[in-house]
Each structure stands twice: as C-alpha cells, then as structure tokens.
Length: 448
Ligand SMILES: O=C[C@H](O)[C@H](O)COP(=O)(O)O
Ligand SMILES: C=C(OP(=O)(O)O)C(=O)O
Image 1 (cartoon, helix red, strand yellow):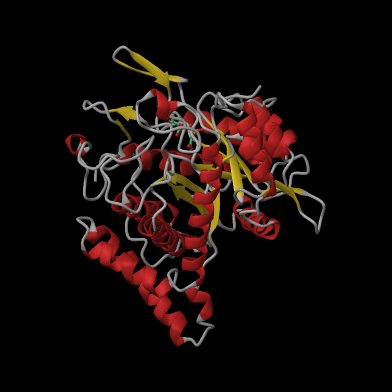
Image 2 (spheres, rainbow, N blue to C red; image 1 turned 60 degrees about the vertical axis):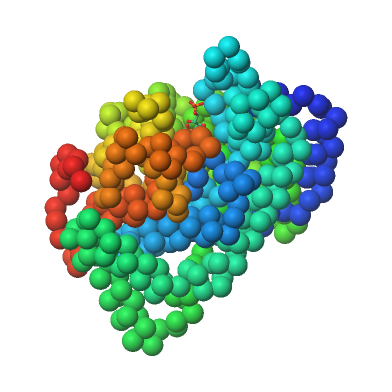
C-alpha cells in the first residue's frame, strides 16, 4: 500500500528529478543521525526530554533568514525552560528543513462548482486554487531539496555561531515574561534560569558549552520518491540512512504496518517515529516494534501520541502497557496538536491552547500512573505573531483568527503561545525541590 502519494503526471520527468536527487550530496550525515539516536535513547530511558517543533507545512517562500531564526529561537527558549524545570537535558529537533509535504483527508478540494486536487505541500503542488497550481510537479522535489539546504545552512550557522548562547536565550525569556500578562506566574522560573547561568559563569566552568547547542531536523517521511532518492549507504558501516533529515516519522494516515512507509523506515538506520492516533489498535504497537525496532534498541523508535485531549487518558494506557510488556524501550512523546483541531465560526481550522495543554497534562498523568516516562512534546509552532490557535497568555480570540492566519495547512502556536506552553509544561515537569516550583499542578485545566 502506497498511501498519500501524489499523482505525478509525468513519469519521465519524475525519473529525471529523482535521478538528479540520487546524485546530490546528503543533507545530513550518518554520524549526526547516530548522535540523535543516542540522545533519543536518553529520552527512552527517562533521562532526557524531546522537544520537537516547527511549521505544520514549511513553504518555499517561508525559507527566510527571519522565519528560520524565529522558529529556532522559539524552540531554544522553550527548551531552556523545560530543562530547568525537569532537571533533564532537552533534545531539540525542528520540524524543519524537509517538512514540505502534507497528507490530506481528501484528495480533492471543492470550491463552488470547481473541484481540484488538494494542496499537498510545496513539495508537490501550489496553494493557489487553480488547475495549473494544483497539478503535482516533480520538479518541486528539487526545490524542496534546495529549500532544505538553505534552511539547514541557516540552522547550522546559528547554532554554531553564538545565536544559541544560553545567556542570550535566558534574557529573551526574561523579556518575554516582563511583557506577558502571565508575568506573575512565570517570573520566578525565568529569574531562576538566569541565576543558574550566572552561577555556572561564576564557577569558572567551560563557557564554550553555553554558547552552542545541538539541534536536529525532522520531517514526515511522506514522499517516498524523494526519500528513496536521498537514501545513501554509510561507508563506515554499510548501513542505509535517509539523508533528507536526522529523524523521519510516519504519520497517522500512512502508518499501515504492512504499508510502504513503515517498510521504508524499517530499512534505514536513522532514529524513526510513528504517530499514534486515537484509533490505534493496541496490537499494532507490537507490529511497529517488530518492524522498526526488532532489537529493542533505545533511541531507535519514538511513538508520538496524538489522541486528543478528550481521548488521551483512555487511549494511551493500553498502548504503553503493551509496549512495556514487550520489553520495548521506546520514547513516548505527546503531539497535542493533531487530535485537537476544530473549525471556528469563521471557517478557520484552529486549536485551543487549553485543549493542547490538557492533552499534555493527560499524557503526563498516564505515564506517571504507569511508571513510564512522559518523554516530551511534538508541536506545530512558528516564531511569528500569527493568529491561528486560540487562547494563550495574551489570548487570541476566535474573532482574531482572520488577522494573521498564514499557515499553509494546520494552525500553529505563535511565539508567545509557544512560550506560554513551555512555562506551563515546566509546572507539569518540575522536579521535586525545584526552586521555581511554586504552585501545585491543578487536576483539571485552569483557564488562563
Ligand atoms: O497536518 C496534518 C494533516 O496534513 C492535516 O491535518 C490534514 O488536513 P486536512 O484534514 O484538511 O486534509
Ligand atoms: C500530518 C501530521 O500529523 P498526523 O499524521 O498525526 O495527522 C503532521 O504532523 O504533520
């Protein structure tokens, strides 16, 4: 089964494009993928958290220095808050440099009398509702590769060049808190982070470690023509790696255990993830384990649960229990976005901050009850001040949605909402004895 593949109109052109991609340099290296695997092994063992985030759908026009920097900055700011609260390292992974293709609920979109193919991401066709734009064009796969190169170039330069300096990140957080209506709730944590860094500086520890960060990239491994073309053999080990990104995941719509996407991931040595929606049959968890992680190696497989706030407390326990009974040491991560999409009266797809937070709360509750590790979050976000999700500390109201609704597919948290989420998650993840652990976590969501 080859689910969600575009109907490429010109097989010769597709062959020419994938041939060129097959000869192109890798975007990421096997050693980097192995390093991410090691970091994710920490998540699976309960010694680290994963923070994975970025656009729902990257666009070619969205590959600008400002936009890439904004997403990176948002993730760095969130990570420092989570790490301080939990006392655990946070593995930072962008939904970036490759997230250009989308699975869709319907292959077609209707507007009035006109029916056209659905937009499947810039890697496949254009957003404009015209026949020409919506026709899949394999040349877009090369543009995806080039856009990923440009994004990675920016990320690597920033991460290695001082932009990720923890002291700067802590200052950004203090600025955010100072301007936030929730300052009273967050200020203590932001101050504690800065004080901890001041102490590290004063202690004479190696300052270079504060100036750089590890940052990895990931995307849904959806377009098999692209992924196969970028698969390379690592000369050191003879193993195959997808070199389009460090981590690839299979989505809710393509996770058939006997399908082509799981089969592709089973053949590469990268760390991989599978999204699990509310309808996941508990036994399929075992099939994913056997297909993707037969050696039960921590770091190889992460399950990203996206059950929705209403269902997570019912759906998740049996999935975790199945995996535990099997001796699996996978990472468990919560995607609180995809199970909480609703349509606003204006017709915009949106997600409520409170539902997002409640899903993570349910996810953490379930893991704590079972003694397993709630290994982190996977979120759709941007560094920009968009109005796509409702709520948050500086609340976006349903009537604000049309103001700055720019996503190419699903609604993202804006910069402020992302930081609100990080500070609220910090309360959930706060370790005992944490200096900034000032209030008990409420049983049910409190309105912000
Ligand atoms: O990001 C996830 C999916 O691609 C997206 O939710 C699909 O949206 P649709 O239901 O409008 O096709
Ligand atoms: C399509 C996505 O999610 P899911 O497969 O969980 O619906 C996504 O994360 O972009």
